[in-house]
Image (cartoon, rainbow, N blue to C red; front, top):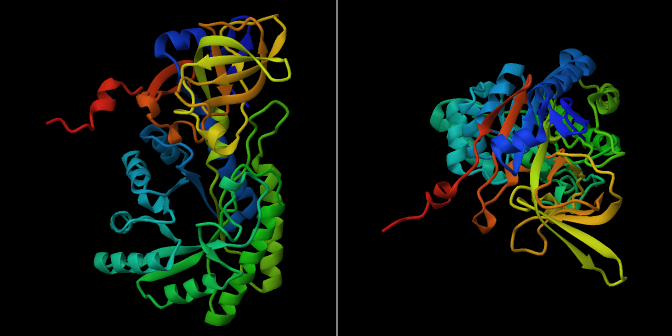
Length: 438
């Protein structure tokens, strides 16, 4: 759950030798602390594993920007040499500001605006993943205007029910994403793309969901898409050169869970793809993947300060301790959105007090403002204590809001025992900056 630089001693938590108390004193709370070296090593791990398992058919590891992106992280990605998957004009702008080569950028999204498409084509993104028939026309028009032939892929829905929360399962039939293989809309989209000479169909893309353990769902999706690639070959007497298998590889949020590592999934996927391609008489296409959460999630923790503590008597006569921290759903929406589960620990001291049934909640005017629904915490927890929650690098700061006009937290990078702000804390001036003053 914790980054490789995190350690614990009598003073509580430290990262890179910097104690939680010292970090809170310098940067305030709540704050996201990201281990830069760990981020780099995880990204490199996936890139190396893709190359090792697919050899000459290894495509690109696209870091999924939606998990978390800022210009510094974009710069890390550029230096590591992997690609990036963006799904809005804003994410594209950050990637470009961080110096990422457009030829390393893949544009996603189920409702790309004309302006976003035009911008992507103009700057020369490597590939645009098409999600609707309307987008085929829009990208074709943008390519004509720019005088280029734009590489595209089709996002396909293979009819796979991934074993994850409904809101982050994306490859069954009743979802907003992609073209369905089963209904025939995928083949209709293929025919439409092939009728536009301004578009180069590179291949297919699928993403079955997020926070998935095991490989069965990935393998089933790949099998169905490879069968469609074989049908394409029969119809058009040519082979599609690429297959993007998406991401969704799970990470550990709780004690006892294990983060999915490349060696847990890529050997099985490699064997499956090679076997199915051989059976279908296909050359092995370039294989790309999109780990986002799996790269950044384990590298980051959130540091909070406890503000109030109260004991609440439950209907069964038991007691639940409500521990209120100085953040909440404005920097971690996942508990409210997905019933996500997190862990927390005292970060600035140790305690020998007995553990008691507790709930960590935020400061927002909302009953559902819950960070951790059920957890055992020391009975002597008190205002002023620091709590650290691991594995918050993905979908924490990236989904943060200003609910109740709470400024969003900063992100502080830790590297080689030094800390520096890479996203500053918002302030009241930021909250007022967009208001039109007469």
